[in-house]
Amino acid sequence: MYRVVKAPAKINLTLDVLRKRSDGYHDVEMIMTTIDLADRIHLTLIDENKIIVEVTEGQVPSNKQNLAYQAAQLLKDQFSITSGVKIFIEKVIPVSAGLAGGSTDAAAVLRGLNDMWDLQLSLKELAQIGLQIGSDVPFCVYGGTAIARGRGEDLTFLPSPPPCWVILAKTPRGVSTKDIYEGLDLNNMRSPDTEGMISAIEKKDFQGICRRLENVMEPTTFLLAPDVEYIKESLVRFGAEGTVMSGSGPTVFSLTMSKAKADRLYNGLKGFMDRVFVVRLIGGRQE
Ligand SMILES: C[C@](O)(CO)[C@H](O)COP(=O)(O)OP(=O)(O)OC[C@H]1O[C@@H](n2ccc(N)nc2=O)[C@H](O)[C@@H]1O
Ligand SMILES: Nc1ncnc2c1ncn2[C@@H]1O[C@H](COP(=O)(O)OP(=O)(O)OP(=O)(O)O)[C@@H](O)[C@H]1O
Image 1 (cartoon, helix red, strand yellow):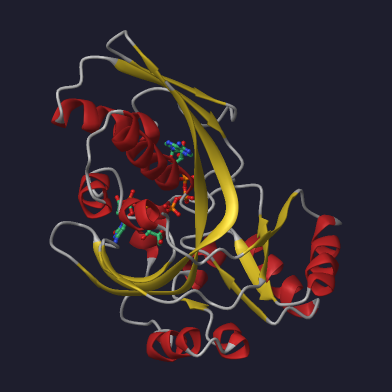
Image 2 (cartoon, helix red, strand yellow):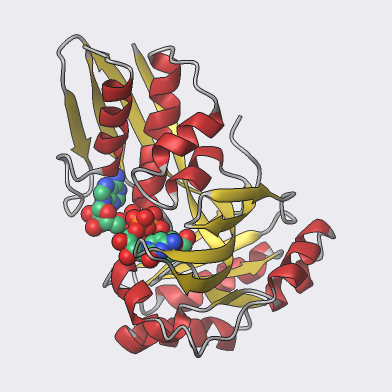
């Protein structure tokens, strides 16, 4: 049996870090939404009792460190599956970019194998399993638009933001999520207007959404990678309506309703960097 599963990236419209917890993680409050920049996960069931991973991107591990491998392993162990699966990952989402690339691959494997192995688990159960892999996996299991609290697994779903274009730009060097969390100055952070963002999304107030894009991780990432701040400033200078860094970075994105403006921003950035994308915001849940 063979299936191909779409694994879309996320962006953070707001990101606040509330406190450090005793387990080493941080409590967050953030609004995430799904965009139409997606890896493709090809799943083939095999008789042999093993998990084989192949990836088109050289820097991504194809062993147990791959989050997609870990997703298949968790299901195999929990449900005593004695056959195997071949996972071929067509990587489109840039790696270590703040777009949950690895997490969404893991979530797609959970959804795909749930179906192919006929496990009949709900999305809630898949999200609980996914949290063992990473904090962004539960959101990626559902997709859509949500407020994420706790480590990122406590999800409250919101309506989709108005349809718009997303221009994303990633600087060449990735950043480590762990390093950014550890570098935060928790006593000296200005929280995003999360309530205002929720109400702007509910009212489909596009300008209100753009005005409230905010991420408390920006200063820490900008200090480690000044080129990321330069990209943000460039997008603002080119006339973007709202611009912010996604997750721990280094990807920066802008939103616009106008395709002509999206093309202008794309062309402006393409002059001095390779990894620029223009995609649609999806914002709706997985079926
Ligand atoms: C920055 C975000 O991408 C925002 O969406 C997420 O919070 C990160 O999610 P993720 O990449 O799935 O993170 P994980 O793989 O669970 O954790 C990587 C590292 O980030 C730190 N981490 C992550 C999530 C969280 N709520 N608190 C943390 O302190 C921990 O040091 C952890 O060792
Ligand atoms: N399937 C996968 N795709 C991409 N990276 C993976 C995968 N599995 C494991 N990794 C490893 O995970 C690390 C982070 O990659 P990823 O692209 O998920 O980062 P990210 O987009 O910053 O994640 P997040 O936004 O959740 O913090 C990299 O070191 C990468 O080698």
